[in-house]
Image 1 (tube, rainbow, N blue to C red):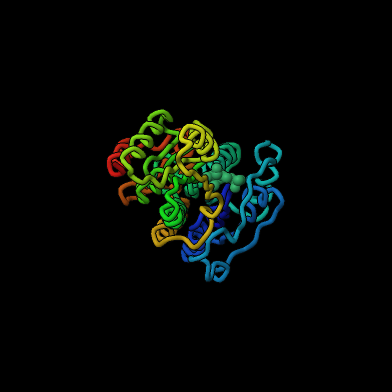
Image 2 (tube, protein in one colour):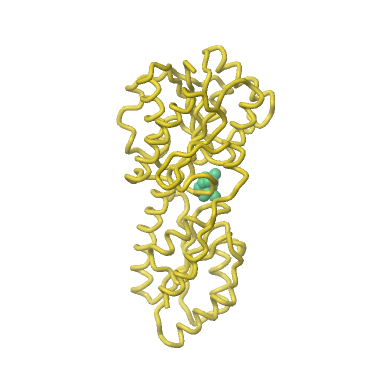
Amino acid sequence: VTKIGVLTSGGDAPGMNAAIRAVARTGIYYGLEVYGIMRGYSGMIDDDIFHMSTRSVANIIQRGGTILKTARSKEFREYEGRQKAYENLKKRGIDGLVVIGGDGSFRGAQKFSTEFDIPCIGLPGTIDKDIAGTDFTIGFDTAVNTAVEAIDKIRDTADAHDRLFVVEVMGRDAGYIALHSGLATGAECVLIPETRTNIEDLIQQLTEKEKRKKLVNLVVVAEGDELGGGNEVGRILKERLPNMDIRVSILGHIQRGGSPTCLDRILSSRMGYHAVESLMTGRHNVMVGIIDDKMHYVPLDTAVKEKQSFTSDWLKIIKILAS
Ligand code: F6P
């Protein structure tokens, strides 16, 4: 490759800027021309593409969001959209692409690079950690730390009022943010989409603790839980446990913002470097993942098809530690 493009697509995640910086600076270091593509695949279709210098990525390693902005492009799902995008790359001679995003973005990249002759390298950028072939995704650690900080604050007021809080965290169809933040904040229970939710068990657990006057402050619910998230769980618990003072708190998009943690900055920087190296050594249509601190190259279709393996004993640990 001689000229590469970089874009961010799908939901933003803290650390995306650090990844963009790493791609741009590594590419330029090795003598490649690097182009920034605005708003994900939309910018590729609308020809919103600019030449990057090392200065274009100055002072961004610590910033949340993405300087390239992001979008979920409907047009790119159609062949005509992808063809338009290809022509815009072609006229500049861009012959390699780094896509920083989640599973939807990888599906797009996979399709695009099989139809047209542009090798694509994916970097897993999502707070949800719902991508197979990597221990971490860019933004997950920051999102979890933000959730933990927020839940600690909720615990203060919960404790002061002897209240039970049902806190909903993000994660789409995955429960990793809930599992990690719940274990780290000493939640009574964590409800996640990966396992069946037995609300009767939870009600029994809470009733038993109420009897022995053990104060229970916190239930963490993943938004994708089968019962329908925090509001629904809160509604059921209020109805079934009328003696308890229960509140619901939905953390929402604060989990997507903020300055990336050290772990996310390092992850993004290493992955960005290896994305460029991958393009230079002729890899194509793979995602750069990290397993046991080593880089792994996973075919894009495997990364989106397979689920992350799930650490099932965490729920048991959470229950025992809350007893
Ligand atoms: O994929 C990241 C994520 O924040 C999910 O956790 C959440 O379900 C979704 O994006 C929210 O999307 P939007 O910002 O489009 O409402």
